[in-house]
Length: 294
Image (cartoon, rainbow, N blue to C red; front, side):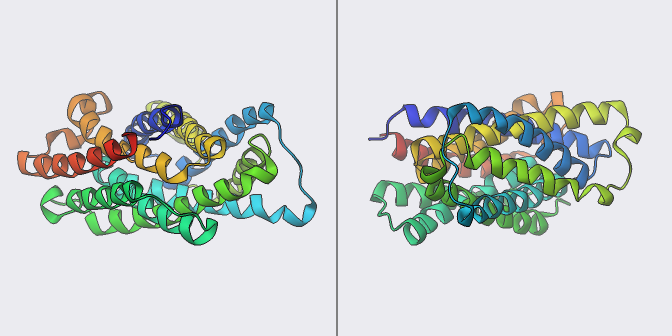
């Protein structure tokens, strides 16, 4: 049975992610571009992750310093593809698709860490993936939605983040929680500054409401990243953390239905057939989460 303590951080990250995604979607509708969102979110994350230095750790030999660079590149790749999916598609579709990384984490854990996974985790990963398939059935999309682009970009984000999660689990013991992640995400912030020339317009030229939604969403996105990757580094349970974290797909559907008007989300007006298919997918994902908890 999974220790309940290991579930708190990924569950908190799931809730925070949904609020971040809806905020950033609203910012995009007000004119905020992909590169604005990427740079602001990653700079906020770079600052926030330095708090982990209080947990201490070790500074390995310079021969191992390529590891945080690899982690940083994977984080940046996942962030760019994930934000692209959120801007181009529905939050309640893009978010569940990113849950594909559950199965990828299970596979990468076996391949890279040589760890055997129990049948419950494999079944949970499979059910989560089935839920995502239902959520992305043609009947679960609203007319005019760019489903293919959303699915492909969210899938690319899933691959990047799955490798990120497994390598953090693999390399954190040698570095410690207070060394690998702060350094890696600081590198993400530095690399992100190279994207500033891609801004379609300066940040200061954006409307004030757009900047407000961007700041809120960027801060929440950084916070959910901190909560989630800290759970993996602390407890070394990447697959369990990902199954629980996949509940963000469920919460995104609920948030759109109940709180969409707060974010001026067009998804709140989805038809019953679309909502019905998404709820079926949500039920499959809930079943996966229960399997991990029992």
